[in-house]
Length: 342
Image 1 (cartoon, rainbow, N blue to C red):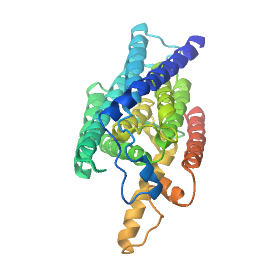
Image 2: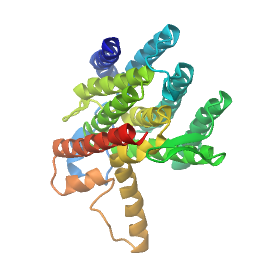
Image 3: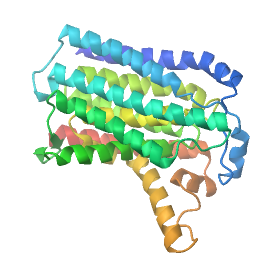
Image 4: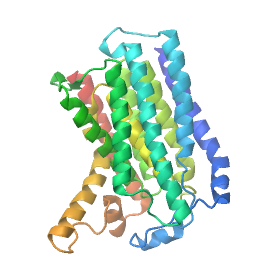
């Protein structure tokens, strides 16, 4: 178990170092290319000072997570290390979920990169259309699920206190909708300095603890790498941000969060663990729906909901602190669900 801890610690530290150090070179490079953020005209007025801040900073943690995950997983797979033989310690199955999940995240990151590049070239805060994004995201989700199906991962899912449930073909439909929904929810959460990175850090730590409880060493290291890389990015992104992750980073993180959940065999954990992401997404849906139904009235001062709290006078640091605390508490609750419910 000492080796277990050392492995996890090294994955986190190495990912942190790669992410943080990459920022030292990437940010000046992005400035040189004039890859700056264009601030929405209808956003909070004080965000205008962020005009021109480099975007695509998500490349920092994408590089860190990809390198560390591939190295640690390959070593893990070749070593055949396993502490307790259970359903959850099937190394081949576990590594398949990690590789496929990383592919899902990179595919979404590429969609985000295309979107960011379009924004930069056209010098406006609009990139790909909503339809274009959705088509590409469902395609990425479909390929991910097809790969899992091809290697016989099946259509079962584990629900704490219920057990293993076979959803049949409906599993693929529901999973695709969940993946695309979470990816976009994580994307919507990126609107305040340090928010998306901080939330995802706590989600990754929670999954790390859960993977450890399930004796999934590969997934534990994967989660640790995500947490470490997010911290490395926050060195540059915490308020006042010197760089934004852009859609390149936020869509990648959305894919990563889904990858971690599906690798545990319990994607239902996305409900409690992703509580902040979901609140961000549904605040937008409710705002738009209410606006249309009432012919111009607003349910929130601004959506996504982090902007509502900004308009109420909360500082960006306070928003990040409170939202992170909520995520951490739900992460603890999710860990307890797995500990006592499986």
